[in-house]
Image (tube, rainbow over all chains, first blue to last red; front, side, top):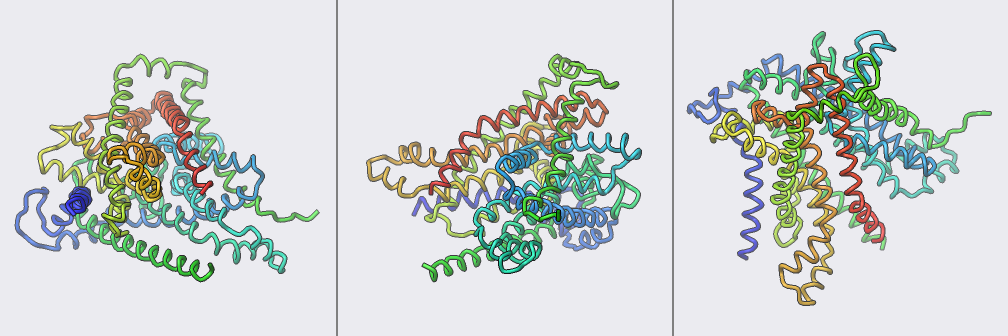
Length: 282
Length: 264
């Protein structure tokens, strides 16, 4: 009993410490003091109103979301096709793809960013004869970050899949295309989805690759694309942090918690379903 | 002859993508590390890196920070993962999720929050740059340790632990002879998740030490910003070499782990 209490205390103490900074920000998002730690006793939703009027933050937020969705979609497509192709290629090709796929996974983000920038500069100088930094270079940067993780998420699903399903579909008269779409993809869907979610979270969180590979475009118009990360890093550097960012943190936090709880419940349900199904079969 | 579709052709776009944007960039780094502005072969970046005490200092500093951060994260995260995975103490999946959710909040935003709260309690980057940075690093990387350790702990062979108790091991022996050896793969992958990213981290040290502490990542960033491509590339290459070595060193553990999974 004592052991149990000690264990619980430890778990919740660490959990509490991990959330302290965010919780403090959330508390201070309901007042308008400039400095955290100086509670002035005024309860107000002023910061929330200000947040939605702050053009810079809204542009950065919009860019971040658009970029995350597009780069996750592209990464998911590339990574999934890559995983399927590699799985049915010969052993040597597969090993080569897998080894190269592992490079961005273990590589330091700053090395990825720097090396990609070199490639873009050279491509711009010698092939396109123009400055090519734009939304597209940024997209490539994010896909390099995300696609290998999609590959890694789809691969185990391919290994678990019944190999004769696809053949059966072909024998029954399906075209390779519809056999892929209607037989293989549904089987791989859990892996594809978790790869997509992981890509979104990687893209949302990225700073270094964005800072190196971005150019003008998206909602930023003719200026360099600002994502939340680059925007906040920029204002921290200038020591002019708009306090309405506290309101933004609160909203993001609420969103993340809602998604996390939903995902946990969904997973729980899923595994219970699988157990049930197995129970019926055996 | 008509083109006949085979599933292996599906990987062609991805292979092209990998060649263009993963392999080619690495060659570029090696190329710039050993050439000067006009494209001639040179050891200049190599020599200037190893003769500059400030650059070497940065390397040693980053190594120290990475080791310290990894150790602290493991010391906090190991018991945490054990308790979370143990049915006696926790059966709630949401609780595990809560330890991982901070990863989903933009990390620059989180670092900013940490800085504000730390300077509120008197540990600002101006007065305690080292302490502030290490707290920020641990705060940021702890979830990355908890997750792999937790999955390893879930797979602990309960019957082996029971057997060791039945065969007369005391609590310490059960821990050192059964639980630790079984969880080594998790510890290794957790360490990898923390060690390398810490060395190359940029934002955390920059924000929390208010620019007082330069880690390897900051150094690469700075030399690129000052358009010293040779220097930057050389340090990036060094980073790659360090990553390669640590991959080779830890490969044995992960392979053993994979083998075990297949057997069961």
